Image (tube, rainbow, N blue to C red; front, side, top):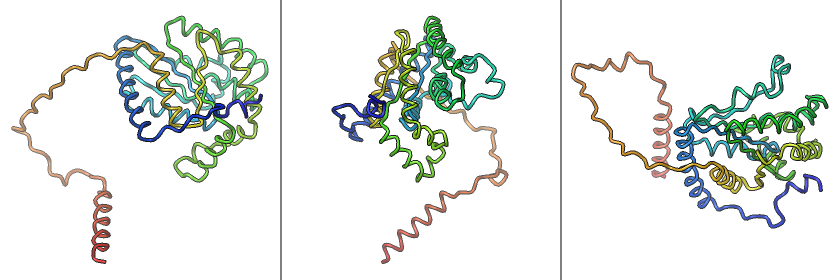
Length: 289
């Protein structure tokens, strides 16, 4: 069966999570994510999260919800551009190593070293020997990371060809999302089956006991976000600590301090006040009518 069929929604398609339930559950999970990040920082844990899958499969949306309320000093998103000429001559994994988490850090790779097994393989950006070498070295590399104490969690976001095309078309008409639609994305739709074969081969070689591929059905974005974050929290052995009682100190008095005149500062124009005034004026005209 081709991935065009295999990556569609399950035989019994799940119901789309109602917005109210989704928002309530997302908030609960994000509160637990904050507690998890606190545990990571206190215990010096190292977590590397890999997000892979089809273009427009929803990886970015999940990453955004995971990091939304986390300290950027703890959680970092890594989305590397195409390698430079110098990086192209390095050991393939070399440029990713410097981005691996140190103690007390969570690194989220928005695409990772698996570029070689996907886009580089399909688009001819690497040779057959380089691809073969990657499939051989990758499990060894990941076992080394896990053996050194890094918690490595890999996610593959699965979406059907019909849903991917729908999301591509929505990006064409959305000025806030047009930047997401690159020539490489368009080519990925044309070469759907080639990407399917590359993904299948990648899974055969890299779905190892030490670092399994966790497939996220992402036909429904809300469901995918809840499912992925819930799974992530279940994979990290964290525990929340009782929050400390915080008391704001008294503010010091301003004896002896004189604020400089307002006129000496250069303020940005108050565009918001102008918009508010225009709205009030418009509302007044509607009342008069």
